[in-house]
Image (cartoon, rainbow, N blue to C red; front, top):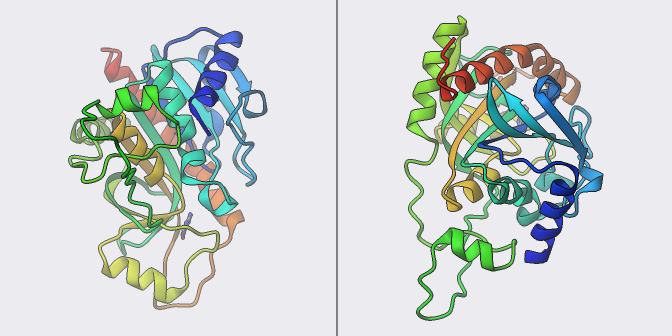
Length: 292
Ligand code: HPA
């Protein structure tokens, strides 16, 4: 994993389509349909892009698409790889670096998550306003030469892609308050119920025990999932604005025995996908200056 890999990925993409996206979208389990509705869209399989890994989980397509959504130039990643598949944080974060290098200024990430907040119902949408990162990687590329005063973006442009954020970097406000407000405005316009809350990022690959769900609730989590935090962290370190959304695909029931399975998660993600897609399109309409 080095800077040439980023260059190779950019070259592979630009050989197929020269395009500067403004917004990057990462679509989680079962949420991939948005990529098919792009105007002037071009799809590139991950297998054709150095540094990209075909997702090993059903419900994740494994294509990068470039095109316009609601008039906004976007790069859409249909499917992601996860730490629980054995990938490193740097590998999981790589698509965000590519999006940033293509010119994207904003990251919109989506995921499927288990609802911890007792008010949540399966199928609800949640805009993430903070996260608790239990992947235990806080960033922390510690070794830097004395007198190094490059910005993070300059550092990343000049150095290896597996570098991680500066130690003691201030993260807040982490999830963009502007995008959170926009999400609520657009949810009202679209007639959608939108929850807001804290995402607990877990390593997986198992879903949680009842005791773990209870603990996550007690430490302040509203939903739990196995992605997004590493992508959001690297995007912020590169100076991108970040917004992220969960589809609540199952509700944790710390007090009654109920086991979650992947089929249920993908099923709810598919059912809620069209609502999340209309929310995202409505937000992009606003960005394009044509609120619907
Ligand atoms: N826990 C962790 N990740 C998940 C869940 C869950 O309950 N549901 C969907 N992704």
